[in-house]
Amino acid sequence: MVPDAVVDALLAAFLLLSGVLAGVLLAVETAIVPVVAVLPADRYVQVHRLLDRRFDPMMPRVNKVSLAVCAALVAAGGGVWPRVAVGCAGLCIIGVAVVSEGWNVRMNRVIDGWDPAAPPPDWPGVRARWAAANRARTLLAVAGFGAAITGAALVW
Image (cartoon, rainbow, N blue to C red; front, side, top):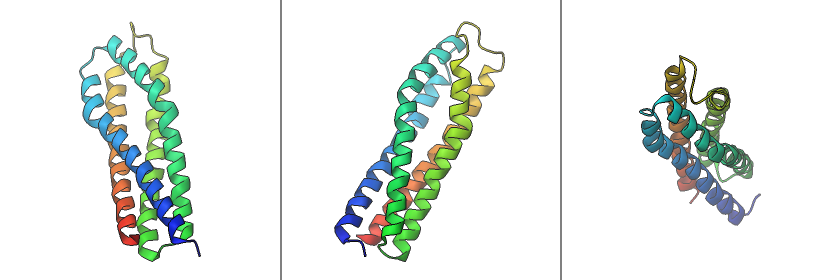
């Protein structure tokens, strides 16, 4: 049996991490995506590269640590329904990782290789697909945060 104080600390960490994940992606979706959607090609490529340099090292780490804490929580206990809620949150975070790695990160690498003065003719389509994938992972992150809150509420 894991002490309640350990479960509480893990829950607090999980709420923080899953909240950061959801908050960052929601900020990108509501503030950054609309701005880059109206940029001309050269500016889009430049801004996208600048943003990627900041987000790429940070967000995968947040995702991985969040999943590790989630796994510890599911293993630690706290009752069946809190574990189910936290497990659902973890599945959502896995979904964020799958979408990020399968779509957004791959497109980031492609965009990083573009010449800002001469992007490929289909660059608006790439931008639109990147935004659609971001929307999907944002919805998953927000749902995951909601499930984490539910799990914490059931424990506390």
